[in-house]
Length: 116
Length: 116
Length: 116
Length: 116
Image (cartoon, rainbow over the protein chains, first blue to last red):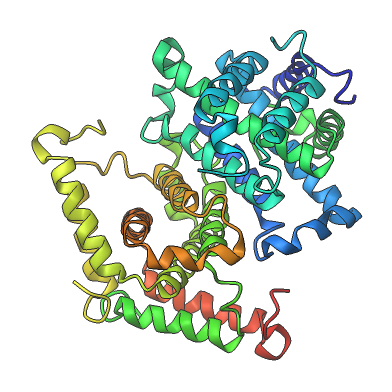
């Protein structure tokens, strides 16, 4: 699988199978899944916990760090996909809609290079 | 856009354009993005903050709640996509690899219906 | 030390010494400390990740779980105390002020037994 | 109330009264409280979301920001105190014990000025 040839639906099916095979639907309720995304995100944050902004580039060049970071990112994505499965959310359309909303909220002329 | 016809790469490009048009790459470093995923996840958690496990089903049938939840999910996904862009991570292959690892870590026979 | 005889200032001094002895003030900036509170809170959440509301009582009677939970709570408190030290916040007065505000925001008659 | 003259037990009693008056004990189970600490911590993180390490000092000199930050810190502390109440945890002794453990884990000679 790779990002160019994999649809969001492919990934949702992968997660749905993993969960169904273990009969884990009862654990994957929206409250538990939101908490699980938070737990995995904290593990991702740990990699940058004490680094200053100017020390962040280095991580990209450390193979072991990048492998660990890739796994945390996958954990977050897996729970997010399961959340979308459980709640019947179409991620691509939710993302497209939100980006359109943000394009209006953050007009380019006013926000170029500025966060507020 | 919908999950059946949208690839992960399509979504990554959408986010990359949004960020580049605003020259926000300098804000979207991995430490800030991990924190941003955590911040948006907390907003998702708020919808279930005081609900008992047996009260969670109701949310699915409230249109306004589902709209708000869909937006929080999109926010999390957007920052996750931007994180993958910044760090050069192929999400589909990271997810596939992690699911394979978890299939070994959590064998069906031992974990059917059990979280530990 | 115990809660009856220990002031918040005592705990702040304990943390300030620990940090100063290691010359860790440079790491303990408000952004890193807020993230650190989040990271430790996620470790606390992990203990309840897959439990239903009606399964939570059991934890109180498991000595090993309670020891682990006590340590996570201490980690959160340590970073919160260090945050207050770094930012010059008087915790007791901030808490008293916030509780007064919440007493007005959540009047007893309207919120008795109700979260909203 | 101020940190010099307020014990942890004083603050725990303040929170216990606030919760009991509203009959909110049923909401304040350990899972909900851990999630609530995470939610409030995310609101604290938002104040530093896009700031570089070298931009953090400024916040201390903005009265409105410091007021808002003080309130987020109080929210985190309130839920942490309620968690300790619910689970019967003596915070001062848990903190003292954890700091002693960390003094052994992070010996001064090896960790002076270093996070790892």
